[in-house]
Length: 497
Image (cartoon, rainbow, N blue to C red; front, side, top):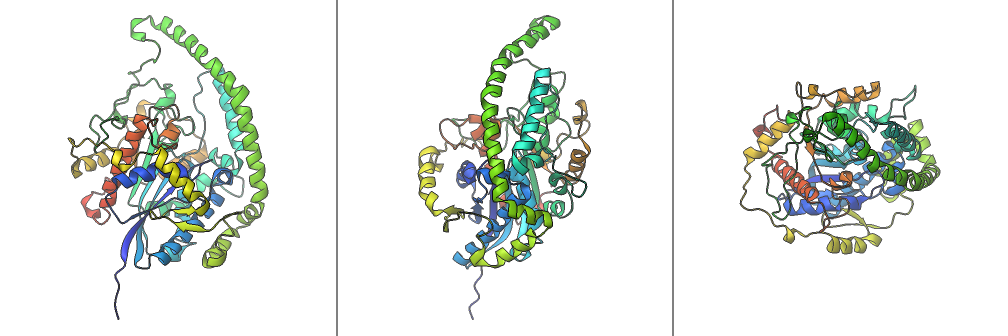
């Protein structure tokens, strides 16, 4: 009898965010392929939850993702009988980070047979609202009115997901889902990962504020209206494209409330009172046209689209929403997973025949040709990377960086700034998540929409912001370094992880 040794492989799952689709992760996949030196990494991007389906709520979106993940593992084993997954990692972008945490909390219990021999390794979120979404510290009556309207719009028109992101979904019998995700099996599942990384935008992210993606109750950028002077890492570890910039990683411990700047007026050259008045009127001149455009054009369109999506979602998913409320959905999930022929019935209305690409991504056959064409025309290939070979990074640089950013932004540094007025739900979430250790990385993506730029959502091409591209290069090299240490846990001290 011949004994065949199976090839150990590492499954890396990338999950997109609200109103997104799997193609939003294409830039990450592409640049990961350029930098990852570990040929055991298999990248999988769940494709089922797209556009309108993302507003169905974290639980329903999470169950769809879990079923699709189990289906992928089963299909992969059928096509690669001499391979097995021994480790699993997750990357969640925006709401995808919350969906990832839901999947992590469920996979060891409701899908034990699939994951019992797979070890959790790395969990990373990028611009994820771990503490929900809220607007703090409005600086004018206009902003108070605008933010109140946006909060009402987001929590009432973005479907169930909107309620959950604004933490307005709880009742006397059930805690809000974000509170649930910070407790019990969800927290235990997250604790099992060797590394937990939270990457947060410091500026220009109008969707997910710094505090919630950095998992903290202080936000100096909101408090000082983005007038704090930054100090970046002058020599971040890694090699970077010589035609682009270095990643802009902020040194949070060097933030000082006394070091401010104005983008419009050099206050040091003017009387303080005059400067304050001039800046005040300049802001009004700048904001009024933008507010008129948003109120008269953007918001009505967004309202109609989101309301239509909410009604559509409610009608389509009424059956599964009821099962979720009654607690019947977990049993149905197990039945569907165990029944290969009917596995797809729950997660899709019009699910075509699927194939598995060489990178391990499940792709709809009807969209495969379109995706390949888009990748060829809009993205930079690995041959186009012009890395700076004059800089060599050894392990000690990465270890020092990980150590620093596992211990940054702690007292007394954070006490220089005012704590945000969190409600009880947010305080519970913050306390529970901070019982775990995190590598927290604050990045500055110089882009009008840093929320999209942190993952280069529109693809990698000549229009990609330099800081966005550099941030992706940094992320790729950091993950590659950590992936290479999969079997060398004892070489990194416990205080780092």
